[in-house]
Image (cartoon, rainbow, N blue to C red; front, side):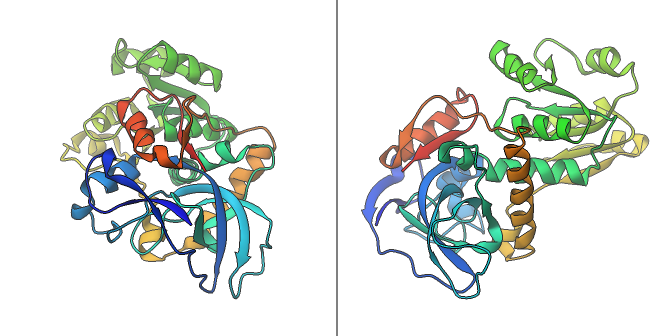
Length: 328
């Protein structure tokens, strides 16, 4: 089968085409003919600094986590799928799990779900990692009807899905963006846009919450921006983030009685722990997408398998609107 591999960790030029044997099929797995895969920030991190990451795959490696495709073979013990089913998931690209930048990939049946019928393969491939991440963050923070929810980075990959999910959960949603295009997308998705470059935290807390603060904050920017989240949170508020690799003063967290939720959605893949939870979340996202309540935004630039390096460059540039997708 055709694949793109890296033989050393480094820049986007590390990708090279290769011919590989079709993967073996283990019990509990399905073999998928990959139609599309999307690029996530973690894919860039593994490619660049894999030698420093304990969950990076051994070299030579096939990267890529998200996929949408068609099942072509069923492993022993798999009863919920049949050959020909269109599925999607986040199931490879780290540790011993082969990635998605190949014609075929084996996927643990617990990590996948049926693809939303109203989404193209390209759209469906954009959804798994960001959808699972946003769902975990918002549900762990107890997002519900009548709450004021603030999403930092509301036009980003995870953020634009979080905006849609928070609205589905019944919340009044606000989201930060850094320019006209981002704010326009945020408003289109049904949230109130906040320009973080021109509006101070105290100002938008005053204007949108009458100074009380937001009930739930999902910070997809993380790092030092968590301090802004703490300042913007209501008393006993909930803050969720995907990026907490920072040394921060937690005094505000203490004096406001805040709860901090750190989401690292790769744990089931890394540790083979509670993988079926991801499958159940994907099934819920499928139901929501088919009901018209969720649709991923896909960047307008199109890439093929041999363009994997260019697709990584596109995401790294910060110019993409929505998810960067590679079609096979």
